[in-house]
Length: 307
Ligand SMILES: Nc1ncnc2c1ncn2[C@@H]1O[C@H](COP(=O)(O)OP(=O)(O)OP(=O)(O)O)[C@@H](O)[C@H]1O
Picture 1 (cartoon, rainbow, N blue to C red):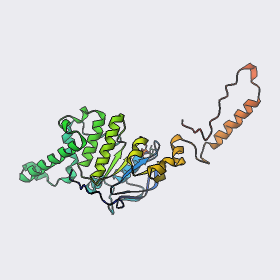
Picture 2: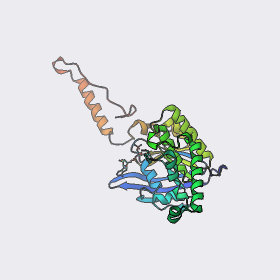
Picture 3: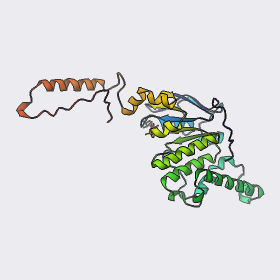
Picture 4: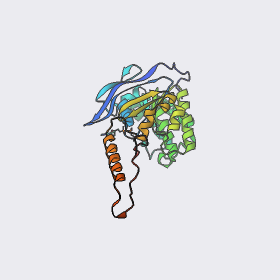
């Protein structure tokens, strides 16, 4: 790795997303979300399925043009173009692994370096001394990353032949090849067993120790709360809570959002009241033709609607 090993001051923001809104027709997937990630931080982004986490990532990385709001990296507003965002210093992995399946592990990492190599087409075609030097440097840097992620012994394997956990690691190695200052990880432990998840946690700490800030989406709460300095919770496109893992874990709105307990006044209250009234009425009426009443206990707000 060629990044600095001196951790930057924790208060310097590298990412500043301000008032991001993303609408798809009538659906507001992300609604006025602001989030900062400071140098040296690992920040978690959690929320129930469909909360807007990946859409927010796509707004940060130029895959989507936000309907409103701005995204800045190190004080510069980013153009909504993914290759320019990568060039600026933000790299990401995807929820659904997107490796070049028929390329080797090493080749996948070399591809990730292309935004940082300066050799042009003619240099590549003529294979002059400049190109050969750049090629050697790229190769060395890629091998360093494979050592760092524990994949060096698999350098000549095709990406598609790697076990799932190693494919996720390779995605991270490829993202690191663009020498980012901020790494966005979208569900890095999805499909991993507990040992792989633990290794992934250690890898993210090591990445942070290289001076790279990390923003991570994850459904594995233990992983998030062990890993992150700060956690933001998205619910229905809006940021519900943000704080240290302790603060977020103790917030009853977060528990309610995950268990699906309706908020006060949310649609569903009337239906619950109707069911209760019908149940009460049925209990007062003797069962006809001797049949046993099959009345079930109505679900309460406290019990939640986890359907
Ligand atoms: N390209 C799109 N066009 C229309 N709707 C979309 C698009 N992308 C996402 N959505 C919708 O936006 C909402 C948020 O989706 P998103 O994938 O961002 O949620 P998420 O929090 O990442 O969910 P999960 O944890 O399941 O991955 C969902 O209702 C989804 O159907």
